[in-house]
Length: 118
Image 1: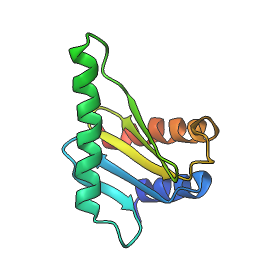
Image 2 (image 1 turned 180 degrees about the vertical axis):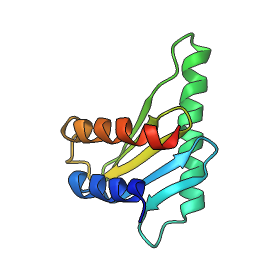
Image 3 (image 1 turned 45 degrees about the vertical axis):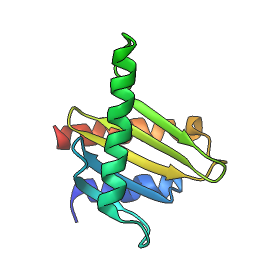
Image 4 (image 1 turned 90 degrees about the vertical axis):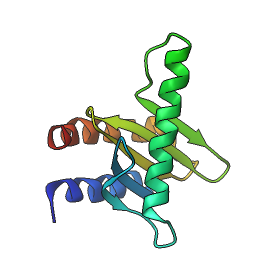
């Protein structure tokens, strides 16, 4: 098992995530720990598209590109965050897990993983 896989598994445990993935900007999977019912390819491509769409929308308005996109529904919170220049972390947690509660763990992961991904 690689160091990145170990880091992903540890982040999933700390955050109690339902799903977690590190993907390239083009939607390719670097490492993922997803439920069996999820198509990894579809999931990763759509997450990359969501972050890309957010970047386009922000820059069209003259704002800096976002580093994170949050999607919140009644039964899940999806965090898509840049990790370095070429990848992103996707984390799906229960809605009762406030992003502020897991933000420090996400930030530590992003900082450590960026070194392996750039």
